[in-house]
Image 1 (cartoon, one colour):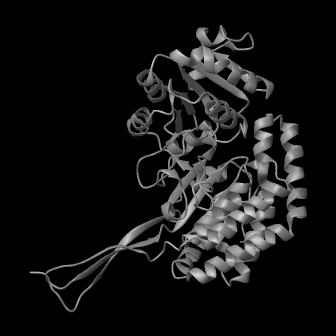
Image 2 (cartoon, helix red, strand yellow; image 1 turned 90 degrees about the vertical axis):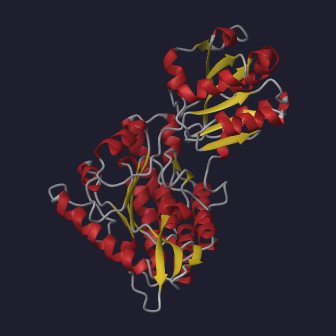
Image 3 (cartoon, rainbow, N blue to C red; image 1 turned 135 degrees about the vertical axis):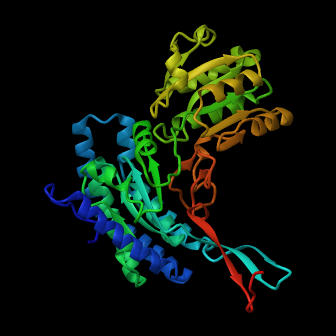
Amino acid sequence: MDGGSEVNKSMDIDAVMDGVGAAARAASRVLAQTPDAAKSKALKAAATALRANAAKIEAANSIDMDGGRAKGLTPALLDRLQLNAARIESMAKGLDEIADLKDPVGEIIAAWDRPNGLKIERVRTPLGVIGIIYESRPNVTADAGGLCLKAGNACILRGGSESFHSSRAILACLHEGLKAAGLPETCIQMVPTTDRAAVGKMLTMTKHIDVIVPRGGQSLVDRVMRESKVPTFQHLQGLCHTYIHKAADADKARRIVLNAKMRRTGICGSTETLLVDREIAATVLPAIIDDLAKAGCELRGDADVQKLDARVKAATPEDWDTEYLDAILAIKVVSNIDEAMNHIVTHGSAHTEAIITEDAGAAETFLNGLDSAIVMHNASTQFADGGEFGMGAEIGIATGKLHARGPVGVEQLTTFKYKVRGTGQTRN
C-alpha cells in the first residue's frame, strides 16, 4: 500500500493500519543501512518535485481551503492551512537544507577502552518508525517526512482531515524523491483515510511504531498523552510570553512585540501574553498598543493597561491561560522580574519565553531561572522554529524533558546504541 489514497470507509481500519505499520517497519530496516548520499539524493529530488508540481499542490490546497471555509475554520486556522508559491518554495528549500545537514546516523558520540581490552563506542542510530499526528498545517508533511528520512527513520503521517488533499499532493513529491534514490516509497507513508479511528489505532501500534509525535491543539495533545501506548514526544500548546523589563530599549521592544504577536498569529511561537514592568508601562506601552491595534490585534489587559488606551478590553482570568492562535494579545503589568517569572511559571506551557532588556544581569536571571524549552533575550518568540535554528525544519517544539526538547530536528530523531568489540574476552 502506498499510503496515498483514501481507503473505503467500510474497510477494516485495523487491517489497513497494520499493513501500513508492517511496511514502515520493513522500510526502517532498509533506511538504517542507507548511506547519506542516497538519503540526500531523495530529499533533493523531492524538493525538485515540489517546485515542479507547485500548481498541482496549490490546486489540491484550494480544495482543502474551500472545505475549511465551509466548516467555518477561523482565519488563523485557514492561514495555517493555506499554501501558496512562497510557502511551497519554503518547503522545497527546507528539504534542500535538510539534505545538506550532517548525517547524524553512525556518529560516534563517545568511545573508550576497558582494561580487559574491550573497545566500546556509543553510536547514534535511528529511532525506527515514527508516527506523526498533526492538524491543519500541510507543510508538516514535507518537514516531518524529510527530517525522518535524513535521520534514517520510516514515518507514518496522519495529517488533519482539513489538509488531506494538500498532504497527498506533497506526499506524491516525496515519493518521487524516494523513487529517484532507489528507496521504497513506504519509507514515508500517510494514513490513507480521514477516519478518526485510524488515530486511535496508531496510538496502540507498539509493534510497528517506536515514537508518536503529536503536533496540534490542546485537545489532540491531550488525547495522545491520555491514550497512547507508544512513547510520545510531548508537544504542548505554545502559550508564549514576552516580558518587557524596566531596562528595555523602547524602540527595540516596540519592534519585537509587534513581530512576536502579529507576524503569524497561528503558529505555536506567537506571543500570547505580554508582561511589562510597572516602572515603564506608561511610557512604553502606549506606542506598542497603538501598533498592535492598527495591525488588527484585539487587546485584553489588566486595569493598569486599560487606563492607557480605551481600545484595551478587560482581561479575564482565563486570558492568562489561553493560547489564542489568533490576533489577540493579553497584557499585564508586573512589579518586577520575579513577578514576571512567577506569572510565566504559573500560566505558561514551557514552550518559549522572551525578555527585552539592556540589563545583562536581568537577562541571565530570566534565561537561567525559567525552565521553558526555549528562552530568548531581545528577540521575537517567532524565532522558535527549527528552520530558524539552522535545523532545516522541525517536526515540532517538544516541551517535555525526556529525550527531545525544543525544536525536534534530525539529531533529536535519533537514539544511540553501544558497539562493543572484543578479541575473545570472557567474563569471570
